Image (cartoon, rainbow, N blue to C red; front, side, top):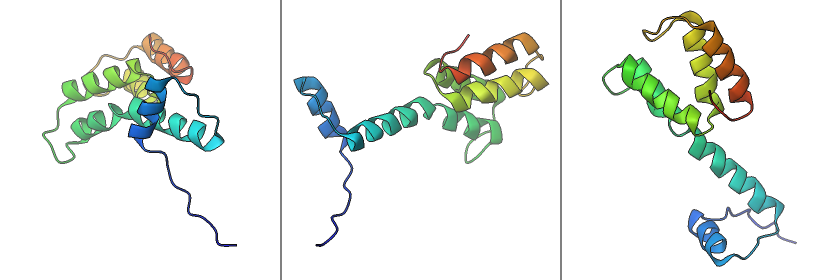
Length: 114
């Protein structure tokens, strides 16, 4: 028996199924939707890190902070954890705020933000 190659569901397929109201009962589908959700939620983290490091663009701490905060509001654990570090150590030009850092750390672990 020849092994079949695992094929991911396309985003268009997922959207079409969601709009039609038809349920997809598949472990593979559930895993892909979960992964897609994580990618979407971490989306703002990457531009934040690019601006923080000046990776291919002008280094700008205030723009990095705006991206991190926006990503954290969308549920990005990476952004929430980065903000916890930023506020803990007073990085990126912010005044250290240990209470806010703790809130980002705790709430980020639950996928919400202060």
